[in-house]
Image (tube, rainbow, N blue to C red):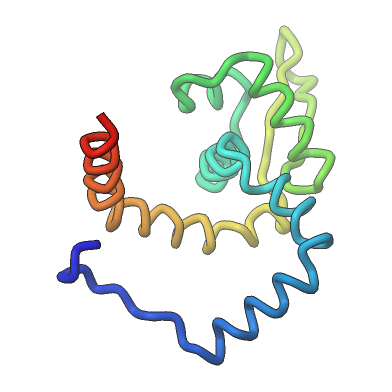
Amino acid sequence: MDESLPVKPCSPRLHKAVSAEALLDVERARPVLEQIANKWSVLILTVLCSRPSRFNEIMRRLDGITHKALADALKRLERNGLIHREVLTTTTPVGVEYTITALGRSLQQPFEALYAWSMTYGPELERAQEEYDRVRD
């Protein structure tokens, strides 16, 4: 680890509380985290935070997602109350627009923090991967 990085150690009190809670509530937390921590879920919700979007627009903005993966993720997000699906009857052919819900928007701050972390520490992560691969080859 690069010692020059501004890393704050976990406060021992907070770390113990989080660890104890994680051990006690893993059965409750895991199913929830499996729904929202999926890479496509995070990216779809991030896209919808800026504005409501149609299926093809979401697909264009998420390079690499397949039609099936997007359809499945949107159904899962709607089922979990994180997005709202609205059929637009004013258009021909009939269109569908997806909007983030208040519950989904409550994830915006944690996602923004995760994005900021990835921008700050992404290069360090890449260096660690390269070092790992170099040592293993």
